[in-house]
Every structure is written in C-alpha cells, then in structure tokens.
Amino acid sequence: MKTEIKKPSYEVLCEAAELIKKGEVVAIPTETVYGLAADAYNPDACAKIFKAKGRPQDNPLIIHICDLDMLKNSVKEIPPLALTLAEHFWSGSLTMIFPKKDIVPDTTSGGLDTVAVRMPDNEDTLNLIKMCGVPLAAPSANLSGSPSPTTAQHVYADMNGRIPLIIDGGECKNGVESTVICFTDGGTGIKVLRPGVITAEMLSRFAKTETDKNVFAKPDENEKVISPGVKYKHYSPRADITIIETDSDEKLAEFLNSKNDGGTYGVIFGSEKGIEVPTISYGSTAQEQAHNLFAVLRKTDELGAKRAYVRCPEKTGVGTAVYNRLLRAAAFKTIIL
Ligand code: TXA
Ligand code: MG
Image: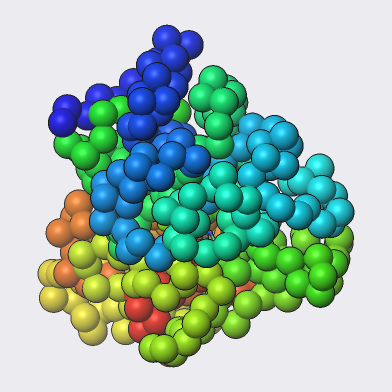
C-alpha cells in the first residue's frame, strides 16, 4: 500500500472522510500526538488499527468526538462531574472513561465494558470527525512499543506501507498523550490512570483526585490493571534507555564520562557542563520536555545510539507525564547518583 502525506486542505479532509467511511485507517494530527484513526463504531475498521500498529487486542482505543451528542450516543451514563470537566477542558487533552453503549464494539474497547472518550483540540481533526459523522477511534500512530509520533514524518517512519493517508498538521503542540481518568465514588471522584499536560493539580480543583499507583510503579506480572496500556513496555527506541536521578551536574558529567565508549548519549536539560559524551537537550521546563521527549527518543535511534542516559524530569505538574513515559521507555531502569 502506498502511504501519502498531505496537508489538511478541505479536499484532503474530504478524501480522509471517504477513506474512513469505507472502513480504512488514516493518521490524524491532534494537539497531543498523532493518532491512527478509524470509524469507532466499525469493528472491522478498528481491527485494521490493531493490525497496523501490531497492538495487543486487549489494549482499548480512545474514541475522539467533536460534540457532546457523540458522547451521549456512545456511553450509558455521564456523571455531572464529567460534564463540568468537559466544559473546562474540552476541546483538549483530557480522556474520560465511561460505561459504553453496545454501539461501541468490543474490538474498539478491547473487550472492556467501558470506553475512553476525548475531544481533541485540533480544528482540522474536529472537522474531519464532523464530516465522518461518527467518533474516530485512535490510538497513538506509532508501532506498538515505539515512541509516540509528534510529527507526520514520525508517523511515516512507522506506518509507511500500512495505511493509505497521513494528514500532516505539523508538530503536535503538547507532545505527550492525553491525561486518562476514570471516575470513582459513584462519579464524584477522579482517578488519574495516565498523566498528561492536564495535571492532577488542575483536576483537583473540581473533585477529589487520586493518582493510580501504576502511573509510577511497574505492575506485577499477574495484576489486573484498570488501564491495560500500563502493562506493556512502551515508548522505547532501539537504544537502551536508563533514567539518571541526580541534583548534581558534576556527578552527572562524571557518570556519563565514565561511559564514554562511542555508543553512549546523554539526554539532559541543556545547561550541564563538562560532559564528554554526545548530548541531546530535551528542554529546561517540564512543558518543553513533554513537547520534545518522544522526538528525542526517536533521535537516539537516528544517531545510532546504543545507550542513552536521560536526566530525570521533575516529578510534579506536567513533569509527572514526562516521568511516566520515561519510566516505561526505560523499562523502569533508574540509577540514583
Ligand atoms: O492523546 C492521546 O490520548 C492520543 C491521541 C491520538 O488522542 N491517543 C492515545 O491512545 O494515546 P493510546 O491508545 O496510545 O493510549 C490509550 C490509553 C492506553 O493506555 C489504554 O490502555 C487506555 O488509554 N484506555 C483506553 N480505553 C480505556 C478504558 N476503557 N479503560 C481503561 N483504560 C483505557
Ligand atoms: Mg500509545
């Protein structure tokens, strides 16, 4: 299959909508990362998403809506808290989990009786959803296990030959995936299953908010997790990633220099001195780090790095999203200096 990359003109959105109505898969830009989209109500189309990604069948998809009617059409119950959050954070990077209606097939929900829903903050993609007239199921548009794509070129690198069309909306604004939450205490509390740029602190203004323990911990082998995505190794380039936790620039430089063997790279904040191995900066604020993380992980492969040591981000606010992705990219390997 030939994979085309096209900028989102009206004609291109019409072409994408036709493909989706025919049951095909199209890569779409969102403000978080690129998604691999198909008609959420069509099980055969959604099966093609799993195939293109090489994704385990039990890992459910997020459905992307353009208005609240699509939400009401897809889910059984909407707690009032969800409507309040929708009003404040949609269109935007908040994904909420609801009991699903039968119209959402098991293929889409990974066999769960719930479905994850969000309204993306991207005008072209919102228009595309409207043209399709159905929600679009879309996981991140990477091969399963690889870093999520934040440019159309990243999508092409993973999906060339697997899908007909990539809509090129430029670089994604946020760079990490949406915050995934479920409701607790009969719909009055919030539990964060995956952190994103909408932080637990921001959500706690609206309701009691807790963070699921699997956000920062490795689930046990046989544990039944709420969000199946947390149990897979994820976001990993070919290079072996290790997190370095330290407050000391000198200790960081000393450690990296002791690994100076040609294959080692340091991924740092940008201001550290005295480092002799090649370095890549991923930005000095948590927002910049979120924006750059996946591109930097992909870059380690482009550079042929065998190993990359990534300086640990802060563990509050948006930093929690960066740290959560990094832990999985590193398969939880951490060195404290
Ligand atoms: O920003 C995003 O959320 C991007 C863009 C494309 O919208 N999408 C995305 O999808 O990151 P994906 O499939 O890569 O990640 C979805 C996460 C997975 O960890 C999955 O297990 C979880 O959401 N999830 C989806 N449906 C769920 C459900 N019903 N219950 C619990 N977790 C769910
Ligand atoms: Mg993903």
